[in-house]
Amino acid sequence: MLVGMREVLIVVYDGVQSLDVTGPAEVFDGAARLLRGGYRVRLASPDGREVTTSSGLRLGVHTGLSAAAPLDTLVVAGGLAPDVSPDGGLVAGVREAAAAARRVTSVCTGAFLLAAAGLLEGRRATTHWAYCDRLAAAHPGVTVAPDAIYVRDGPVVTSAGVTAGIDLALALVEEDHGAALAREVARWLVVFMQRPGGQSQFSRRARTRPVRREALRALLDHIAAEPAADLSLEAMAARLAMSPRHFSRVFAEQVGVSPGRYVEESRVEAARCLLETGDDGVDTVARLSGFGSAETMRRAFLRHVGVPPTAYRDRFGTAARPVAPRPDAASG
Image (cartoon, rainbow, N blue to C red; front, side, top):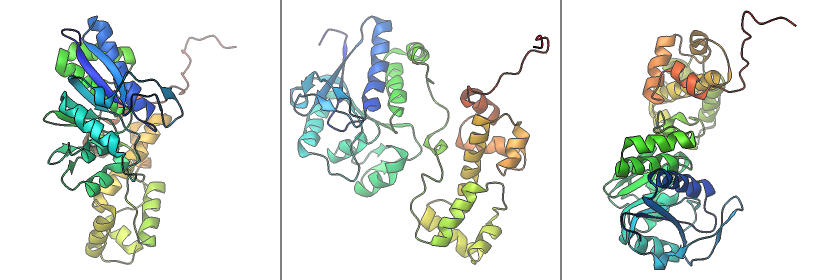
């Protein structure tokens, strides 16, 4: 390794998610270009052979995991199916490479490999929102943070799904070389240096654990389809012919959150969709999504997304929205 060069090794294997690999690689490479050095990124597979990604792309690699020299940063990419036991050789290779690294990181389901290697025991960690429950169930010794984009616990840093690997890599560049460089890399890649909100901004209904009661599943579908309906505790309890107290207990047990929180998150999601794709004012969006007032919606957005509705629209509104002609434009 060249003097002053930080060695970054990205672990790949058949079925790896290509963005989990290329996202962090582009961040470190962008930093190296601006620094005229600073990082060297290499790919390592268990046997040193090329791998095929989940999308069918073939990636060449630089080395095998068993040949990994002392490292600055180990990045374990995701793509591993959480319900499939990882290959023992891959787990052993990750464990061996981690022992040679100053810091160990994972992207998406790469956290399952770190956990299988015993590297997350007694630590806080995260993974893709769809698999946080599985990580917690499979590895009770890991404290899973389901809403985090990335979690740092000592020398181990885990990140959420797919593009969160970019957020992770930018945070590491900032740690190594300061915010100015990380900001410049983010600008070059046209991404947020620190995205607003956590994983909770992604589909409330999709993140909901499977529920056994058919009537409760129908209620969840109703909330998603009609966010502006009467979704008071009393109204929802009446739909299931339960007392409000009993309904609250059943809902929390099966869904994992309180009825009030679930409704608010669903309404935020509905408002996000309207802000992204339409031109209605915030008062109208608040009414259509069930908040009743723009101020109530603003407070909910700050809690769940991290920015107010107007800022969210500025950042994520569709580029296809038509531009109004200038008042002085000549008529045809």
